[in-house]
Image 1: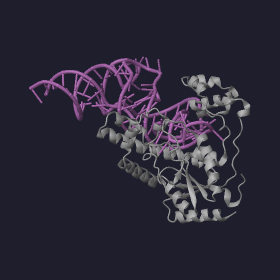
Image 2 (image 1 turned 180 degrees about the horizontal axis):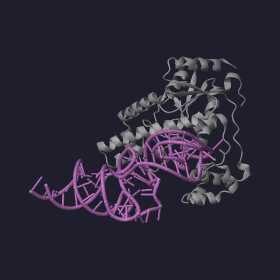
Image 3 (image 1 turned 120 degrees about the vertical axis):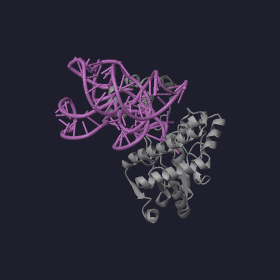
Image 4 (image 1 turned 90 degrees about the vertical axis):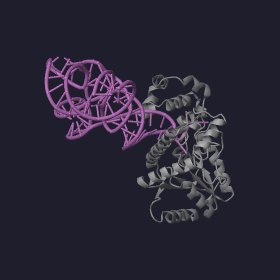
Amino acid sequence: MEHIGSHNKLLVVTGPTATGKTNFALEIAREFQGEVISADSRQVYRGMDIGTGKDGKGSVHLYDVVNPDEEFSVAHFLRLAVSLIYEIQRKNSLPIVVGGTGLYIKALVEGIDTVNIPRNESLRSRLANLSVQELQQMVPKSVLEMMNNSDRNNPRRLIRKIEIMQENQNRHIKYHRRSFDTLQIGLTADGEYLLERIIQRVMDRVHKGIIEEIQQLLAMGYTWDLPAMNTIGYKEWKCYMESPSDEHKNEAIALWIRHEIQYAKRQLVWFKKQQNIRWFCINQEGYKEDMKRIIYMWYTSS
RNA sequence: GCUGGGGUGGCGGAGUGGUCAAUCGCAACAGACUGUAAAUCUGUCGCCCGAAAGGGCUGCCCAGGUUCGAAUCCUGGUCCCAGCA
């Protein structure tokens, strides 16, 4: 399992939505003999293609790995991605992880301590209807004090904390960071330009048939309360699906665009704190050549 | 033209004499984030001074009035909506 030299290289392409990450990654894959792995929490769902923008379907790993009513999380991503990376490296190819799900990328690059502690369904169902205050009372003061204010008020985080505490200590096996020789490329764009691209892309997806895609998902029995359906590009259509009209359609599109913009901003907040990402602005002349130069230098170094 | 309803902060929408710079939702802005992360959560959100506590100013269509005190009551104006003509 030892990887040396160019055999343990890992290229990561990340950044906010609508910056052309996937297409760029596919281009690099062709030029550098690599394989693309998606690091996207929504592209894993089968049947959700248009709304999640699965470019290069057929030549990207980790698209379509579960059905929309199945569970998926960073832990699943990590297991799948790590074994794929090893496999690709073994073939002497370059693994290229591309995606905007910041947590997934971070988990892959920096490791994540408690991944080995799985969900405890019975515990979760017991806690499901408790209020934030009740949940807070279940975690020790010392732990609570270590949490920041927003986490302390976040039921999901509290439940996870409780879940972790319930596990016995020996399950606390830390996830050891794989020591990949990693280069992280970040793609971004000026505010104005990013907005234009987002709007353009939403309209494209409407034309490509997002409505039909959702109708199909609903026909297959998937419901609006699934986490998968709580996805930008899908959730906005609930009202329209229940009573189709031009008005509802326009509302859905407007909402979708807004959510997409908000999402991009949230991503940027996250990325601002991530170290070791080499950023490139896509509305700058020659950015692609610069990136390729950097990648080439890294790729050929030992 | 008559009758009824209504005009509140960027928007939607509470409030019907004091505890109201005005619940709440949305938007906006700032931020958090280690098994739902395209998710979830936090803070700010009239203007000015202040790190904060706090203080000052303007304010619920407009103009007057009643009252110790009005977004809330009265009068007039104006605009919108519904019903009747």
